Amino acid sequence: MADNSKLKTQNSKLLSLGLHRVDGRSYWFAGYFNPFDRELMVRYAGEARANRFSETFGGQLPFANARIVKVYDEDRTAAGQFAETFGVEVAETFDEFAEGLDGVIVPFPSGGDRRDYEVTAPLARRGIPLFLDRIILEQSDVLRRLMAESPAPLHVTCFMRYFAGLMLPENGQAECVIATAHGEPNGYGADLLDLVDELMGGVPASVLNAGDEKADIARIRYADGRHAILQLFREGNLPMTVTAFSEDRQSILPIDGSQFHYGAFRQFQAFLRSIETREPPVLYARVLRNAAVLQAIERREYGQEIAVG
Image (tube, rainbow, N blue to C red; front, top):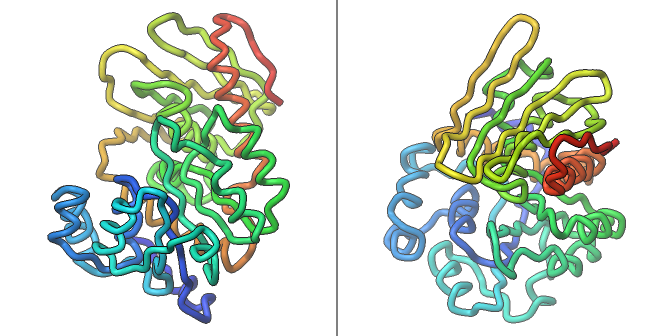
């Protein structure tokens, strides 16, 4: 686990966080900041979720400088269960929820009508830093507007971005990346592209989807001439794997869940640092370029090179 002593030194007070909307990942995220009632965690989120923290962190809180103090969800039952598990307050109104918070964590599900950036707009306009844990491709225009309107930083990336530290030396850059998964561009494709973006560290210029009805096989060409391949198979259940090639090494990472704490810890570390610096952990230009790449893949104009720069 990374040393976050510098982060603790920078924070002169205990940061008060809010959790907006409750889903399965909410219980995972909250375990980084708050002690929890194990029996309730098992009841509401499952034994595997409860065991994950004792196995990885020995029952200790990863972050001692921040706490989730409030939860808000229109589903009052879900909010109450979360509050009971983690010992936090249930906010009755949105205004009550927003009052006095240093930052807000907003988990988004993989599908459904709760994938909605717009609900976070009032928080962004109040200047509260937001943790938005993935690109919602169909709402990239809303995200662009939030970025323009918010006086506070928005953290918009998947924890997989931080797996780059497992594959390359610090500040290292790949010559080529091949990433493979089962899924769609607006799903695991978005998550994997965050990691590809971190490994490549360049500006994508064009995308060519060489796939068919069974898969998207996207060649991403960068402005400096390098390439990455993102393969998303809609059939079968292929393992998620990323290979990074550099001049002197080849690094292969089978993504099997064992790396999730590594990435999530660093993701939250970056979010807490952004509360202090008031700078987004990932530059908005990079986030929006990734959205453009995913949209080009989704067009499925097979064999056509589409400019994204």
